[in-house]
Image (cartoon, rainbow, N blue to C red):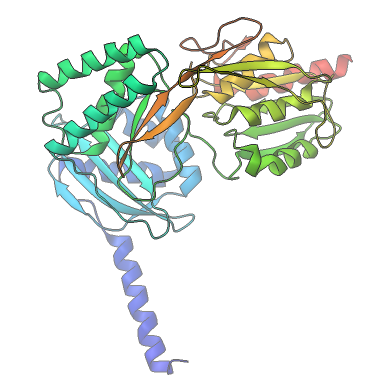
Length: 430
């Protein structure tokens, strides 16, 4: 045990250190000003301020204020710890999540417009003990990443002719110097993704970048993926009127998360109607889609097929007749969707819609049906290569490129209330 004087001194030092960490300010540069505005908007937990930040400094994607609100909910906001690299239009920095204390590494690159607008940005959680490799890329790295990306597409992409077209388009851009001034991995990955998708129209096809070794698990698509519960089940409960409600933010591997799925379904046992909320679901494993869907059918039912270019084989996905706990084979089912619902969330919705087992409520989904295989290029770059296609046994096609159109179209924010209204009427009339 420390003597009282030494202990008091230690507490004083720790307090001063903590206060210093909290008092770090962003540099007075265009990039630093955008960073400060971003942290302020996140920490305010005020949607109006988030919308203002997006209107002033971002606007790269739709519904960005929703993304900022979700990020605030996940992290509790951020404290800026230090500045790793600062230039007029570029800044790299570590931050700490207020809710968990977990650290993350981030960067922002901005335009020279007034006010400055984001060109590229990333905030990446750092696994415990992870090594920061940095955001910078040189000309040798840039050309190697381009070459290796196109090689992986030639070898694995589901449509070989499209892979060749993508390669030709990127080579032409490279020849014209479009990548010559790219000096960070986030922007390189973003540009390559945009240029490849411009040709393929394939939203699953992405080049991902991480500045840390021991990167976080790679999600299936542009949606936010699982949060809160590691298996993706954010909430499972009964609402008024004996309506079961399950919010699923990702379809995890049932090898690890079968018990979580069973527990979620168990919490709504005896419900007279079910609402599955997939508005923040970015996708996941088709095996979990099949397992959960098994609760909704009495007999073994064919859901979907996945054809694989590499093997030439087709894998069939069916429900199973036996699942733990109660089945819900006669209760009305409602699925909530948004434009962010993607991949496995779309399969779940599309399967139930084509089988006429659920009413889809909300917005048309993202439109990504191709299964993907991560192809690692190096410690920092991974290309997500779609190497197969979904084939629905009823329609003989899929939702690729078009999304799943809801039966009842309403803004995503209104979907739950609409589902509760419709479910209440169905339950009352039975």
